[in-house]
Length: 342
Image 1 (cartoon, helix red, strand yellow):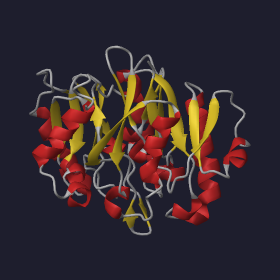
Image 2 (cartoon, rainbow, N blue to C red):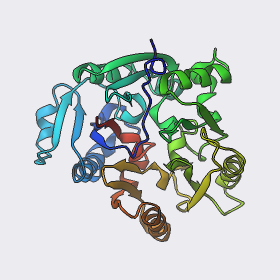
Image 3 (cartoon, rainbow, N blue to C red):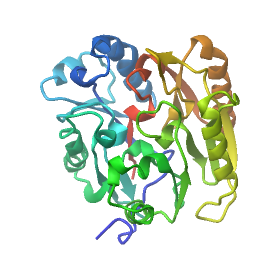
């Protein structure tokens, strides 16, 4: 039996959460291991505390480090779960939680291969999702598809948003056709319509994760990060994606309302572009955790916050320093995974 046949579906991220999972970083797996202390103190401690202002947080920690990590936190709604892992991007290797109309919860355990085999080893990361589901006694569906959580967004009403650059990349599921991948998404997420954007942002080493470029703000409403400089690689990318969204409908037959957010200024490190994105925010209960970048991005930071406040007037915007983690290749959404509340 699969999720669709049992009427389980992936809810939208803004659905109330039971908790958020955050995986603690592993120094040996970092792109810049010399920055470990800076990343822990400048990002992970702040992230966990920010989320804990809104909802419980479970920190997934490598066995042997639990007591050390506990010392950073005094919040009553932060707890710790010892699971061996290679890397800290739990959005991508964690479970995708599902619910059904009877108020039951389940989870999808996707295959994980470290973004197309880019970072070995990943054997421990591939086992994180089933261990989380087993720990909480959650019904598990094992999917025969390599997928990362950051490559999909759903509206909760039958539509999923993704990119061809990622899901159709031969480094994930090279034996599968586009229609076969669509069929698996429909089977395991219980959706009816796949909206395929073309590419993700320039410099994104995940091969174009959608959570850096666009997301649903509500059914029928999409936020998208845009670029207005024709000389920037992201201009053509975002214009093409905008055109796709303007000319499609969702699973309910609605034309989409599109809300643009201007991108931060182009920023590089050692000659490589950093994938700065305001769309890598994370919904929490009654709030949003928003990465901001400061410096030359101060004005676009303010504009992004203004847009989100106008779209979500009932949510508190909690900002966090996105520059402290971005060299590692991701941001707030990439380092979080929600468990839906039933």
